[in-house]
Image 1 (cartoon, helix red, strand yellow):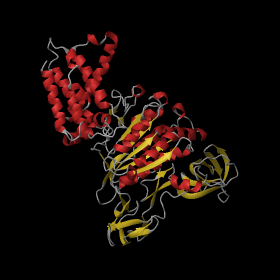
Image 2 (cartoon, rainbow, N blue to C red; image 1 turned 60 degrees about the vertical axis):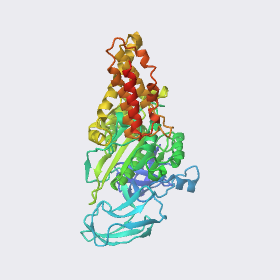
Image 3 (cartoon, rainbow, N blue to C red; image 1 turned 90 degrees about the vertical axis):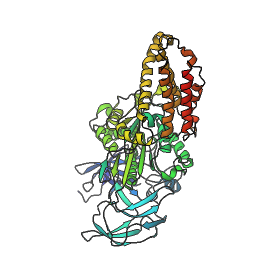
Image 4 (cartoon, rainbow, N blue to C red; image 1 turned 180 degrees about the vertical axis):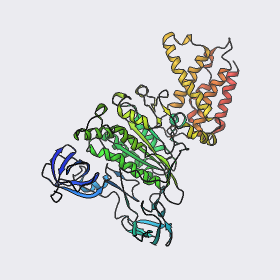
Length: 586
């Protein structure tokens, strides 16, 4: 049977069944049909193989051949990844367009890395050195922002450098010759492959203790994320998931950004592809693309490729993490990834779980997010790297009880819940401060006290408690009107309104307001909270007329806090002094 040629016996959308496949292995890449479409074996049974095809299968029929490649679905890793735009299985879109025009031809293939471009390789290791997996052989200046470290491939232990030389090489040429302890010779190039479904190795995972600075005030101050953490952004249609993720990709202080557009609308992805090459990184003042890899897998592309796109992206992210960089991955949206799994599961006639999703949805989701983390990298150099994963979830109708949202919330420790009501009020980012949370606060408590302010968390807790009390008072106002409130309650409403409108609202299109450093965020909140503390000194006075407080000129200055320079601490202190003097006159 194994001598017979593998042929197709059934085609069902992206699922192809082939017989005479006894030599095939699970997750092996195969070429399907006369046009040699890219596919992957996902089930083996009695010599038959179920294959998910990453291209359109229209016109493919029974009797056509299937070619085994003997390789698993892997990504090509090496210099040249940054500034690239790939599809879900790491085919560079620019190269595909050159070869087939605006409409992608089926069966077309292209290597993930440019095989002809020469890179200036600078050795770090020397002849005779003892090295092992993860050790740096040399470096390549991949972009002006990122120094690419060419590392010893995983699996080579206690090797001796037999030969290594500096010069201009492409990714396929040998840059070093290693001899391991068994006497085996390894010719190492700048290119290596890694199967996308396997997490890359690290020495150990660390407890993350440094915040990811995003420049978004509501995130950094109230619901922070750590470098090496995992966060989810669920929200209904139109609540700003994609815009929020794009903002994080633009402004967060990660050194490398991997942006995955998984099943998103073509016009949204086109906007990203057109906009990113022209954006300037606020941290380095260099073009943002110099530290970015983009994976575009839009809703009109073959559904099976969505399933591969998130794994392709996270494997590339782990590769840069292993060099000792802080990497942030944005997946927009994981709901489309889950829907691709549901479609393939249905075609495989597996027993459906909740809402038709496969029973393994929870384990697959956990497996993906658990690849995030702060790690001690392989190698003897003591490198530390981190991979932060931020996944958008698109629950139908904003229903967070649906399986994808619930499974994501179970494995992520930061939840930025987007609210359609806030979005309709034009309050952006539309993160609901009453529903969102972060479980990473204990991790960064010490960091913020030492690097921002000793009373950082006291100020934050006061602001959060005011927002929570405001939501209760709003119910009372609806029933009996504002005149029935006490002076203290009126003060709470006034200060909470200032927190919402003057602090939480942030204009993503304003160069001065889109990105705010943590020190300025703290000064803004402290100034608003100081108004509450000074006002509380007066609430017990019977003759106190609260209407006059609303007329104070300092309230307008509080509304313009965002316009003050970030490094002008004295300006914030002057406004706090003015608040104290104004309220002391009553």
